[in-house]
Length: 381
Image 1 (cartoon, helix red, strand yellow):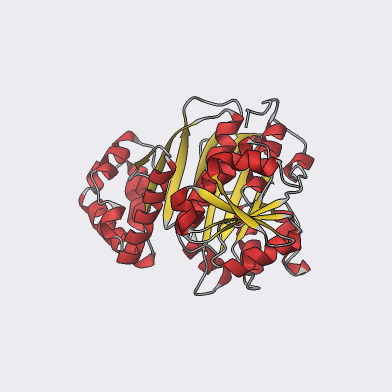
Image 2 (tube, rainbow, N blue to C red):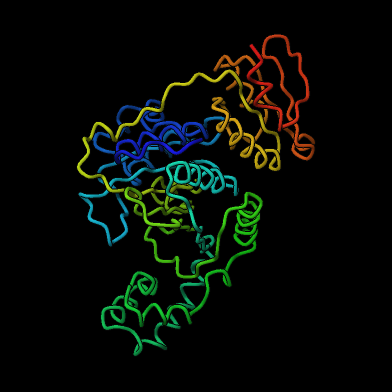
């Protein structure tokens, strides 16, 4: 896709909504219709309100995870160097995906939004703190380290770290930043389950070709993340200020009071330049897809991201659910949308770089090479 006209923050919100919708994210207002009226958000959406809202929706046991987006003129959890009234937020959320695909779908969508806008991503920085047991072990070691090195801290950090050792990571003082670089590393305290999850995320990132590096200093978010990341742009952008995200399963469980729950989220903070609040309720450009993309298995889902990229470049809308764990909900969704054809990719097709194109009316099908897929689809009726 060619870069959109970069006219204003309002055009950025519209662009981000269109890209997110193509990758399967729905407007938060659409998700909101599925919860009782008493639970709906009366004011602007934010990370806090949408987390509770999406979790309430997911508690009704939908057949697949909930992917949503929102735009807010009153961002929450804004990085400290930005002025709230001058900053807007475009947020992505995946609720109900407990495996590594949740992070990958969010990251893929972020890269597409930014690169198509022209704010090319130079690097993804990522770190993990793991589950609650992993974090507790790390915090105990960090507290012991902070007590031993307290004389080397700035006065404000010395007091803050005595209450919460993680406060060290929020300090911008150079001496404190140098100190935490010598401290314990979160990755050395991971449980086996957390280690495997992070390994899976990194393997998928490498397979997709995202430039990345491990950043031990990405610690200290007060939302108790299991994994955290930031995207650095190649050059400063006139609109986009900062891009951050992470996995916040423990935060969701705290909000809902339930033992289970999962959330991957990301926020793009941008200069709002006083744009009208009406622009913060974006509606994606209506494009009715005639195909639904069914993926079976992890390899197919990862390869499927490249297929969606190909169709987006060709200007062909497609429906899909990357986080559906079985065939049935995907087929039900395809039927409900009334598409004319199904694109089906399993493990074999992913290896062969092919896809099965099946008619929704008479179930006739044929195998098509991925390279020929856009041209083939333009010829179907």
